Length: 267
Image (cartoon, rainbow, N blue to C red; front, side, top):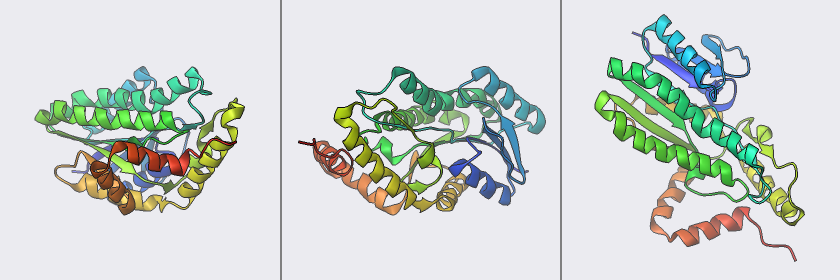
C-alpha cells in the first residue's frame, strides 16, 4: 500500500523538490501552501499553517480520502534579518508563528490519526542555525532552535505509539529562501553597514550552497529508515562543525561565528 505524505511549504525550495522526489518514488503526496503551484502527481491543498481551523480541515480531508497519514514533513518557514534592537515585535511574532507554531499546529492535527494507526513519521525542517546562533538572524536561529528542542521532547512523548520524530538540519542550500528573506525596513544607522555586510556573506554562501536536490536525497534516505535519528545534518562540513561544537568552549564557538557574520564596530 502506498504511503501518504503531507508536506507543508511545498510550493518552493526544499518542499517542492522533496514533493517531486517522493512522487517519483510512488508516494501519495499532498502539498500544503498558501501559494498555488502545479507539480505533476502532487495534490495541492491551499492553506496557511498558522490557521489552526484551516489546517484541521485539510488534515481531516486527507484522512477522509486516504484513510491514513504516514508521514508529515513540516517545511513551511520564513526568515527575517537585521539587528535585534531594530526588530519590530510584530515581525518577531510572525516568524515564530510560521516557523514554530505552524509546525505545532500541523503536528497536533495529525497526531490523533497517527496514534490510532500506531504508526507515523514526523520530520521537521530545521537548520544548522539552531546549533550556531547567527548574528543579525537571531530570530530565525531562535525559531529553529525551538523547533529542534520541541522535536526532541515530542519524540519521547509519542514514541510509545509507534510515532518517530526527526529534525533535519540543512546547511546552506541554494533556494529562493535567500530572495524571500524579510529585512528590517527601519534598521538603526549604527548597525546598517554591519548588517549589510553580514547579510551579504549569508546570501553569497546560500547561493553557493548545496543543490536542493541533494537535500531531498538525504531526507528521502531518512524517511526510508525504520527508526529515524532525532536529528540529521545535511552537509559534511556542517557535521564537522557540530562535532567541534561539542568539544570546544561555547564562548570560542560563538566568537568564531561572530568573526564570520557580526563584523567589528566601525570607528
